[in-house]
Amino acid sequence: MDDSETLAEAVSWRREMRVLIIEDESRLAHNIAKALTDATSFAVDISNDGEDGRHMAITNPYDLIILDLMLPKINGLEILQNLRHSGQHTPVLILTAKDTTEDIIQGLNLGSDDYLTKPFEMAELIARCRALIRRIYDRPDPVIQVGDLSINMASHTVTFQGRQVILPAMEYRLLEYLALQVDQLVSKTEIIEHLYNFDSENFSNVVEVYISNLRKKFDPGPHHVLIHTVRGQGYILGAMPQ
Image (cartoon, rainbow, N blue to C red; front, side, top):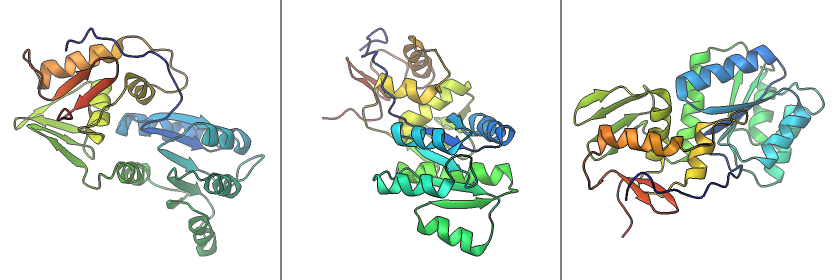
């Protein structure tokens, strides 16, 4: 099947590989967002108050929420309780200046998955975020092997047939996302939501362009064995279902 085949264009707000930062310190929130985007290629959304943050967290499924505790309008622990009582299992990393043992125990007991106190090292935050994301997809090993293709999510490096291949950021993000769901069908809608954040208006045929570029590097020839197109549904990295 060729790259010109189109998929359904409807854009729902189901989130894949997307992080929500609920943090009232605007500069800190944007610094974290930039670090996550640069280092991990995650799509990131930001909320600066508890009320708006709770609404975003409840109405838009995320892969990870970074949550401050001392927020205007609604505090972080109440947001955490609301999420868990509503049955949401989205990983939550509490990021706060409240650093007593009692605070940490309370946050963990209320359902947070990790707890990091301010001040912190950005590299440590990124490493914790990566670990929580891998846990969601049941990928504890940061290296994913698909045939002759190897994707190292910790170092953001890709090798093919033993040689390292340097990819542009968007191509790497797409490849990593497909690799996290190896052998599974991934729709174009999911890919668009993974590649772009709320502020983006780039919902064109770029997915087909990126898929075509990846095929030229890793899956050349008329018969694709690594990246498959399922007409009207999406793409599969790995083996086609029987």
